[in-house]
Image 1 (spheres, rainbow, N blue to C red):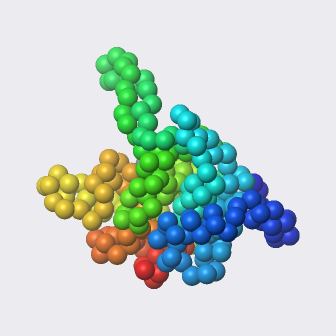
Image 2 (cartoon, rainbow, N blue to C red):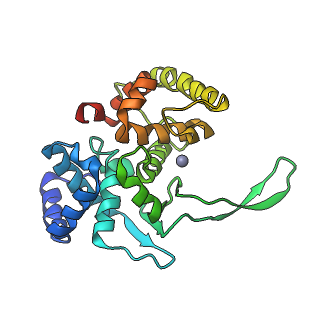
Length: 255
Ligand SMILES: [Zn+2]
């Protein structure tokens, strides 16, 4: 959806609000502790964005998964957390969210350095493709409701934001008031530090999966930023500051 005029936006919202019952919303609010940290202006804004998200994106359950309205709302609300202060335009250019009941294992042809091609099958909880769909396992979405630092929806949508400049490199397009060198100066040492800790078998403040690549580091740090900002700011304050500037939110001030 392009930029909506305020008038058009409120017309659309008026209609979309009627699609879901008060009970649906109550259930979603009850299941998502993340929402309780928002003030009423923020949660109102998030709920409006979620409705516009559902109007804009097609949720496609596969393998017999049955989607209910509270499930739709849950996905949309979580998907809109990262863009609460950025707007839905940041999710332009793709249209589908594919939902598997559980982890899925897509078959991929992989070519080794010697030119030999084989088929690889790895179980995944989520995936995001440039210009393509977001793919999620509903079981993992349910695991993402506890506000314990794991959130597959925020993770995959963070990849989508990263991919907006065409490359998954752990750096989304930055706002005019931000600086790419400052971003790099925050993320590179944090990434190296986490890799070192994982190699040394130390406890880590964020999911060690972040050491897979700078792109995974950004996605995992984004999960931590929204879900468990305390440990993130303690371990990597400069990363927290960059994420705060990028997302234009300060989850630490909320919790
Ligand atoms: Zn990832």
